Length: 93
Image (tube, rainbow, N blue to C red; front, top):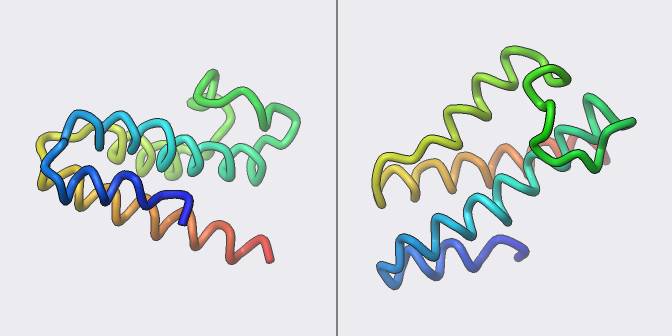
């Protein structure tokens, strides 16, 4: 539910708005939960120093999700990031 705005803007063809929402809402949420999981002391640092505090494998996946080529790529990465967020949250329960 928190993430529906990205899909809505993609559906409308508003890719710039969708991209900004993807970075702030979708990936911002992924980074937040990764921080809580791997570096809880700095849980509120957002993306700052993340390359030093997250495992390399996690960083590779996160970096790939940040670099978006076009609207189609945005949709694919949005779905993958949302799925990843849900997986991390399910592990926490």
